[in-house]
Image (cartoon, rainbow, N blue to C red):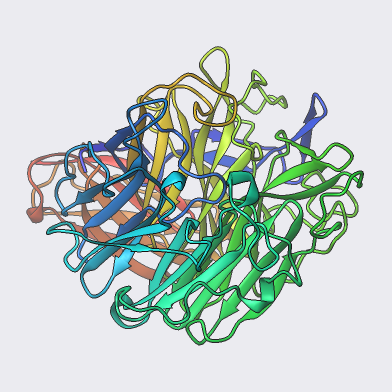
Length: 600
């Protein structure tokens, strides 16, 4: 990675308004928060591709990035440069070899027009991608795999749907088991609206398949799981479904504005399934009008599994006008849920994010993301013209589960004071949960302040948590909204960017209570061999130190573990570092202090 940005870790804006306060502006409420922090301790970003095709998904984001244990990273994105018919549309691929990214891809993996790719690791050292072929070809899905990631020829083969319904769409792919050898595939039959027909009584039926030999054979293949067949649901919306696996656990999440939000989970690698209705629809599986107005998931979901297989999910919120059959894209909120919690009822206000007495959302517990009052003036300072993604004000959530089984949320949100003079921009935000998601820390604005000042940041996809790092690929666009769908904005070049967020601090339940600590200047300063830093803690907490160079690269680290209150000293060995200026950051629980030092 090349573009490293170091930001001194003081809070850029500290709000005094309680997290329970709400601001009402033009019939829209905006939740305030306790504080908004600057960037995490290490934030590195790299542009890895370009595309004119600006629709990365119709709803929930598929897996597009994987960080491997050896420090390499594979990324795919939905690519096309020749607008507006896009004969070159397909999967673009780039690879980080541990030192450098490859050149911007200029051709897709597939031999003909394709779309909606999904990427994952496969085997001990390999990688795999699947996409659907352009609908007029009628050939279903196309796989690409290779045994050594980043090098060699791809093995390619097609995967049709059931007989008479070969043209399946929108694949979702995951691997599990020993060396990621078991492949789990979820896709949809072509809906009537896309030129297809009903299958087994469903318009857009979901099909599950599994392979244990790299895709050579499949068992089962293209089955409709009985828990979500036509006896329960009449069909599913495009890309409003996900599949994830870990060890022998496989989970499927699906739903829509006119059906329940459903979690299917298997603990025996897809042999049997348990169904949980996470949110029960007040008017299930019906598009009959009129109905009451009701709050519902916006179709953009994320799903992750922790080390013991527990499912964590997050989703944005819409308000459906039941008498008109359309939604209002000004509803704001990201909902978080895991399997330890009760499910949401069918009350029309169960997902109301604005404090309605019938709402089942709790701020900083189940309602964990929303747009921020950056200038703390009590007004949502936006132009009011947004790019249309058929989602809420805050949406496109992604979850990362860290080594402590705590969730880290990344989402995109319309961000006040950032606009191009005509439309407001969406930016990426991060928020860390601790105590297994029962509590949440401050909001972090994921932008460097320069290159992303006049950009829209959308369609994030995250890799699994790896050695303190969170890897995110997303689309940056100077023009809010989409040219190929939505509000018909003009075509422009969209940058595909990867960010590496170093997020090393493990949050313990009692850490959040620690508010006061002091850090001395290193002594001596400058120094060449050894220096001492004194830290005075007001309570017991985990203590850690990192040292970064001027480029923001972490060059030294020390994890002191859980320490009691009082005075503690950290000794720095400067003999490992070249002469120059450095910054050291001391972490005490959720708190951090950064100071400058010099080595001669």
